[in-house]
Image 1: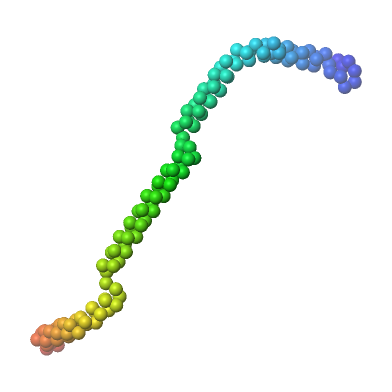
Image 2: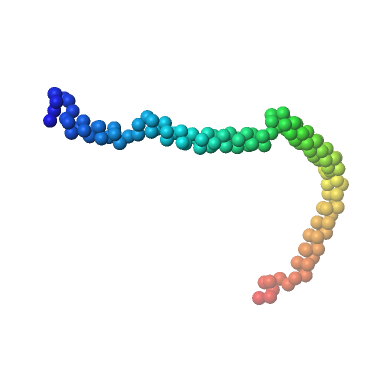
Length: 135
């Protein structure tokens, strides 16, 4: 039954009161949280201690710079050594001009050897029987 137009019924009011009564009161919440506070504080302190320990194990910016400087010096030395080695190897190789001269001086010998080889093959071929003569 409605008390006034648009008002809550007694049943609805009783239902809302039952829901309110089933909730914890402010003193109950305070007491419950007080019991949990040491656990929450201990967890937070433990996490902070872990973070501090992790941070202590990390290198500082100056340590990183010193390490990078040493690595950079090592890389530079390795590059210079490699470059020197490659230059020395290049110096021991023949130049294009030297190769061209070497080929030019050997070309008559190569041609003569090939001509003799062709002549030898032609002579061997002449000594073979003609296939048409066999039939």
